[in-house]
Amino acid sequence: MDEMATSSAARNDDQLAGTRDGAPEPADGIREPADPAADAPAGRDRTLRGAALLATLIALPVTLLVAVLAFTKLSPAEPAATPSPTAARVQSTAPVEMAAPALAARPATVCRALLSQLPPTIRDLAQRPVTAGPEQNAAYGDPALTVACGGTEPTVPATDEVWTVNRVCWHSVEQGDATVLTTVDRETPVTVRIPRSYEQPLQWVAPVSSAVVASVPSGGAVPAGCRA
Image (cartoon, rainbow, N blue to C red; front, side, top):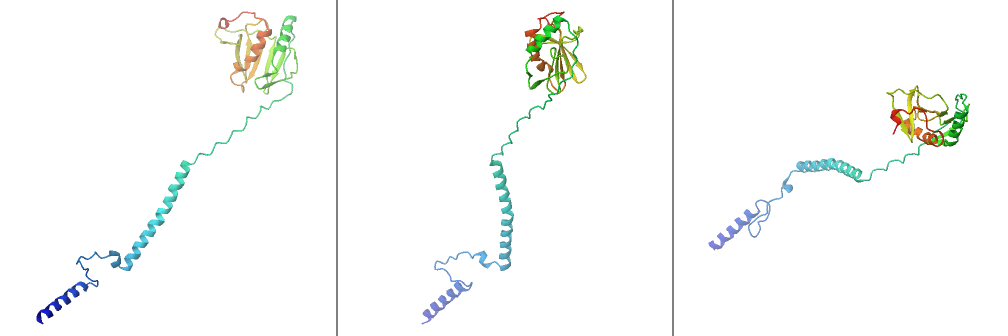
């Protein structure tokens, strides 16, 4: 009887030890660690939840911003607007005032031949009527580029430059708002006045050079700069 009482008491002690922390003792004697979250006070739980919510609120706009930037970078650039066609140059059709000095028979004949060879346009400049001497004068565009045949042959200083354009030698002089080019290798001089608003005057005189070659004979004292 004493041994049985002792065994019963020992078992009771073990049961009390296994349940003294409020949880039954596992059969193998190894207890799992307690869940810290289960033992955490309610205030701490609310703090953790608030911190997690705040982190989410901060991360969401940042994520959206990164997504927008990535989309903008990857999206093809908006095509540039197609430039509108250049508006046509507005040109007056009124007669251009020009002088018409009297010409001797030979120069008058040469000038008529030249006027018949001039083109109807010079680049984008349309031909305009003149106030005097249509048999020796021509005008193009607005402001007017003018061609005068039969004037006085220029005196070319030895230090001045001359320019050969389409086999015609021209002497250039700057006068006010225009560049004035005059032939120096033809028996009858031809003068072209090119407004400064038309850049690179030698390019504008090229079509006139072709008409000069076709109608005005060579002659006169050709400057050294024009000799081949």
